[in-house]
Length: 155
Image (cartoon, rainbow, N blue to C red):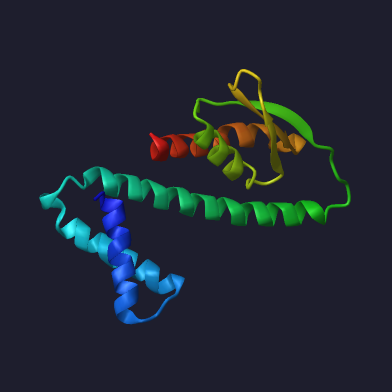
C-alpha cells in the first residue's frame, strides 16, 4: 500500500470514528494521518511522499493566491472606461504529457486576463489570448513558475 493510499485510509477511519462526514473533518483526518506517517517515516521510505505532498500544497496555495489576484485585477479592468483589445501570443512549454499540459493550461487560464485557446501543432507552445499589457508578466511570472511547479508534481 502506498503512503498516499494509507493516508487516505487513515482519514476515512478518522471520519468514521468521529461520526462527522464532512470535508473539514476528512481534511483533519488526512492531516493527522500525515502526522502519524511522518512520525513512522523510519519504517518505510516516506521522504518522496512528503516532498510531493508539500509541492502539491504549495501549488494549491499559489493557485489560490493567483485566483484572488486575478479576481481583483479583472474587477479593476472591468470598471475602466477605456477597454483594450486582447492579443494572442504563444508561450513555449517544456511539458510533454497530455495530463501535464491539461493541468498547466487549466491553471494558466485562472491568471488575470488570460485564456488558453489552443496548443501549437508541434506541442511546443500554448496559444494564449491575453490583455496587451499582460504579455511579459504572463510569460515570466506566471507561466515559468506554474510550469516548474507542475513539472515538480508530475515527474
